[in-house]
Structure formats: structure tokens, C-alpha cells
Image (cartoon, rainbow, N blue to C red; front, side, top):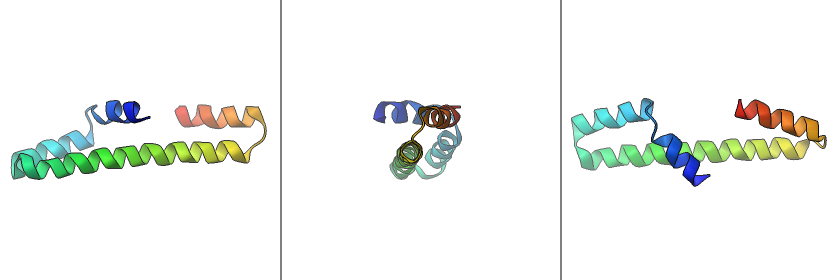
Length: 75
């Protein structure tokens, strides 16, 4: 999971624009806090999503229901 989180957090998106703006306006030292916050928030989001998938899978006993939840979440 950490490899996927790091790889996905490096792709362009709103966090990249935020960091670029902070770097231009406030300098590189203060920008590091924005980078760290964005990375931490992204890892937390992925961890909570995985916990939710795990909780849904344990609620249902049927393998078909489990895989339908997994396929929906991955879609």
C-alpha cells in the first residue's frame, strides 16, 4: 500500500497546484508543510478506504457479495 500511495500522490492534480502556488508565494521551507500534509492526507484516505472495503467484506458471508463490493470499489 505505501508504494501505491506514493506513486498516486506524485501524479498531477490539485495537490500539485497547491504546492506550486505555495512554493511561488511562500518559499520552499513553508512549502514542505503543504507537501507533507498532502502526502499524509492521501495515505490516510487510502488507508480508510481499504479499512472500509475490509469491513464490508467481513459483513457479508457470500463470496459473490464480497467480490461485487471489491469490483465496485476498484471501479
